Image (cartoon, rainbow, N blue to C red; front, side, top):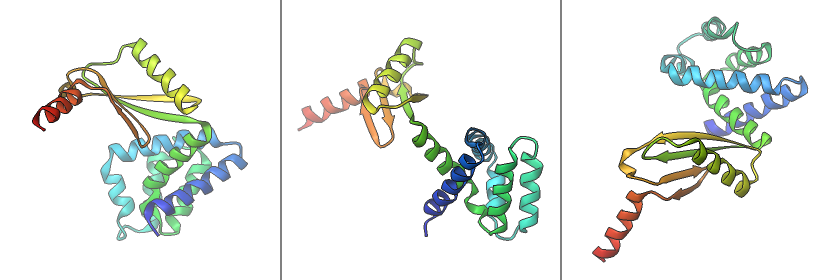
Length: 179
């Protein structure tokens, strides 16, 4: 079974458990923090994925890093997953948890790439359009700056992409003249 599928099942189990214990928001915050720490510390992910590192040592490392930062439910979940020999999927499980949580809450992430930083007005317009078009409750805008776009923007939401950049328009014109 693929890592993403297994991670998705573990994430669903944690969501169900968190809902049952009225701790969904806390578990979400825990998973966001865990994902951020692992993303910034590739050594931690390497330790979790390494089959040579003993399970009790992995649990000790996780407790050492997160004992005072994560809730009891999340720490217990991590311990269970590690003891089952599945520590390699903890990072993927955190990503799947966040994805499933966002789906439940109607939260959408919009990746906006522009040539310069977005103004507050432009950001609010993008949020309003995405909310209206997708029926989202909340929109998280992740900005990226790529000066090669010259102007305009590229908006990605899920598997959809809208390219309104000048660089793209120039490329299309170039292809039309070449044909």
